Image (cartoon, rainbow over all chains, first blue to last red; front, side, top):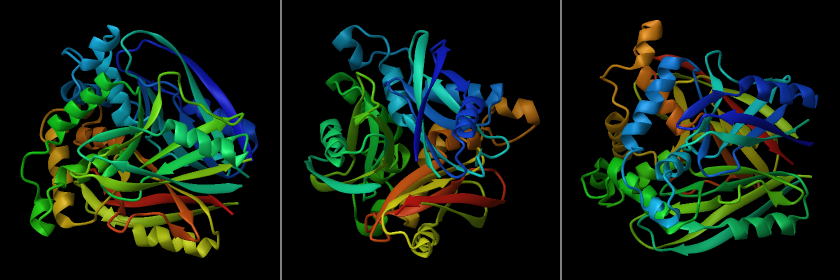
Length: 138
Length: 138
Length: 138
């Protein structure tokens, strides 16, 4: 059985890391399904999905590492194409990846205690985002 | 219902990033399934799957970042084992990841407008690649 | 049909990369299912899942790149919160990702010949880990 829902959120952009765990849990519970897999997907090439302990310190640490390996403030060839300023956003999104799959059992996500689902908006300005939540289960 | 197909492509290697969106769309449409999840998988440890805006500038930006964080032109311990020259290819593939899952609804992938599915061949020579496309849906 | 199992393993931590391919193969075979997708998931925010050629040289190469881009021996803001020492473990886990999906066909994983499934324990001390293996198939 397949259940597809959407989450909507307004982000600030600029590496805005948002905890969406509760919203995903609610979709799973509302589905009435007991066991299966949730697939989360970001339609768009400047956002990523992963899990992290949602704590301000480690979120800042993640942003610092991304600032070092994919710096926001240098030229990107992407900028020459459209006059965009978000070359680093695209590269970060490709590295983190646009999808995440999480098993659920007895109607509950199999997350660890200190593990949250996060959507990372790497774009350079506030965005109104739509994320796909798809459940396959029984 | 499970449908499994293969895509075949010949790459140039050396960070050859290839747009496979249309081929994946065709597999979904040919399946006749309406809603579900497509899992793409690269059998092999020197290729990766992700999404990106398929535009030459940002593809070059991705390659530049990978050249910086996983340089091709330095010693790797992997080379000592087999006399290989592709240690960086393996590390890049492990970072990007070998799989990608994308929901589809009404027979269409839930990709964003400027978001394409790409296979990245990180190996150091041209390869004949086989990718697995598996659909689970209804 | 959904089958959920757990793998348990004791790690050394400190970028302990462990080959779990055989254990996952056994879960698939024991399920009796012919075709479908295996989802692997790490409950916890300091571990990651990916594939790699399981060879000591390339494992050391992966660790060296991670040491360079997410160094273990510098301050992390996460340490200020709990007095932890594993800020880099969290960032690495978020980059590699907590999940992996692999199709199987005719009861066999579609891995390449030199491609193994690995769990990477990035935490700073030995851990007793539980991994979720969930199969959806027919």
